[in-house]
Length: 65
Image (tube, rainbow, N blue to C red; front, side):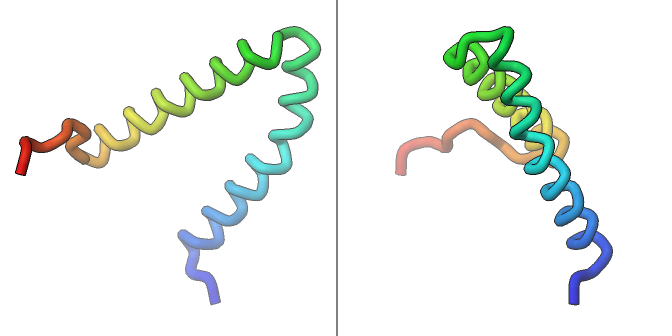
């Protein structure tokens, strides 16, 4: 059985996945595919950077071993 956090995560993932196709279809009517992909990748990278900073994860590589 799923706990509350897992259920909310599943619902969020399902909604994001379901909205993906209509948003992509509408966006590609106005933008080129390469520009759209560049926007989504940049947005995803910035979101991950903000998330990891919020969590306190160090992103710089460590020294040589």
